[in-house]
Length: 253
Ligand SMILES: NC(=O)c1ccc[n+]([C@@H]2O[C@H](COP(=O)([O-])OP(=O)(O)OC[C@H]3O[C@@H](n4cnc5c(N)ncnc54)[C@H](OP(=O)(O)O)[C@@H]3O)[C@@H](O)[C@H]2O)c1
Image 1 (cartoon, rainbow, N blue to C red):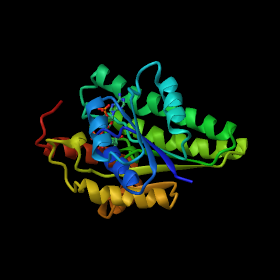
Image 2: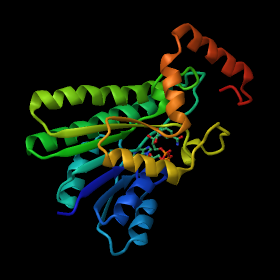
Image 3: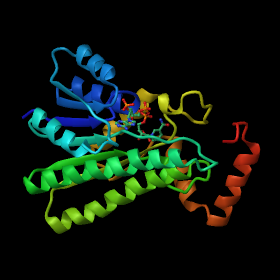
């Protein structure tokens, strides 16, 4: 039977490349995001393929209802990738920025994974849910407090759901992908170190999904950086933050 995949946040960047990969594999792919013209471009690029699109804003009240409609249009879903995300440097703790990060990365994500957990569990189906978390969620980052915390939340929440799946007898795999910097609109105009090419990163992401990995840092040097980040004692971690600010040539926000 044809595999059915839904990508939330498929209009650009990592989600867009993931959706294209699955379309090329011949899967039935549901694509969602706010930019309708991007969804249309994707449908037009693969006129022969089974691409179902739906304009969705993960921060709106009707998000769960939209997911329900998308699954009905798809005729089911075996794999769901939540790639929608928002985050910027926020050293002045701008309230609107923090709230937006929480709305997209936490509230939208919780609604999405909750909907699919119940859908798979209640219908006795096998499912796989993937979230695009981040290396930024491994340790608390002073330069992006909201983003870093929401990305940590995503990975931690999936850990809880792994235990809940056991308790509810559900056959669901949860994958938390943690990329370092990836060359997408997300970091456009920033001169971040070790920025990885998008297509290469997505190759690694797809491999991790295929292998049904629980947690995967993407990739190469970022794996070592992740290990280093985890091992640094808290006082030293704080001191590094101070150095970063002093040496940074980025405008202070
Ligand atoms: N690029 C990096 O360096 C990097 C590193 C680590 C983790 N990540 C994570 O990777 C994920 C994808 O980011 P990207 O790098 O591919 O950046 P991107 O090209 O900016 O993609 C972000 C995606 O999120 C969607 N989105 C944002 N707000 C939304 C909303 N309210 N409702 C629905 N969709 C929304 C956007 O679609 P619309 O605007 O059309 O709605 C877009 O498809 C994010 O979760 C990000 O945190 C990125």
